[in-house]
Image 1 (cartoon, helix red, strand yellow):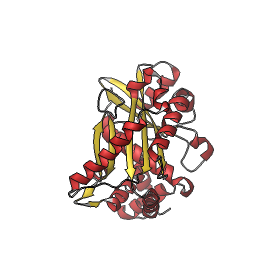
Image 2 (tube, rainbow, N blue to C red; image 1 turned 90 degrees about the horizontal axis):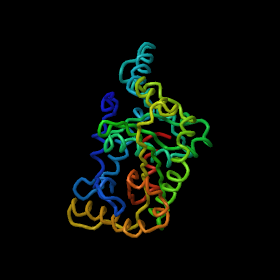
Image 3 (cartoon, rainbow, N blue to C red; image 1 turned 120 degrees about the horizontal axis):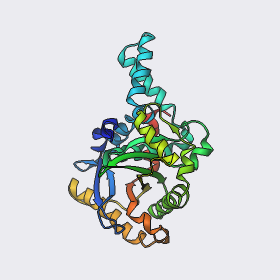
Image 4 (cartoon, rainbow, N blue to C red; image 1 turned 60 degrees about the vertical axis):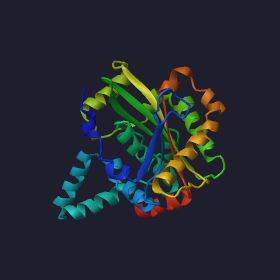
Length: 300
């Protein structure tokens, strides 16, 4: 078993801008799902800090540590110092984001960070380059990460949805996410892997695991599914203290899940996949404003 923890990026600064509670959502025996939101400093929501720290992970999302060093070394060799190279590296990475699909890429970036922090799962495969072949991207998985659990490798197939609709936003996002992941991507994930490109920074051992899985020579890999939904929440948190407001936000999510979990799309999930389903729910007040702030910070 190789050391996957060594591949993970540092996410603590970004995670500190979020608040999360693990729960079973009434969908599993153990509390493996996340109800999460933007954190608060006293009574104020840390929205600006959240956007800034999320944007700071863009370079690591696009380039590995090894690739970053290669690019920076080339820039320094051309007559720049470390600070100039770092700025240019960020500018190069942000060009991978498309203004036309910024909402979807916001969700993918959020999913990438949360998978690494909470699931200790490193990015394994990525879709075609972010700015090309957009038609193929829309129909592919949003993420494939790999972790070590109980001495075995586990792959996480991730699907991210962001909805700005203030009516039934959570239900619609969950329906779309579960439908795409369970009924489209999971049954075809082996074929979809053929559309992915191996990151040039992934260690040879990880690449061999993936190729072995595709070839059938390494089938002792569990596949788990992760749905993250970001949606516009119309109900305001209440409370006189920071903790009361955060607890109120989580309670809103849990109350929504009590009704949503009876939806038909949950009941249509195959029984063998139920123990492998993971849900992350991220409510936001003013989703359009948050995406606009992310776009401004990113400079796209």
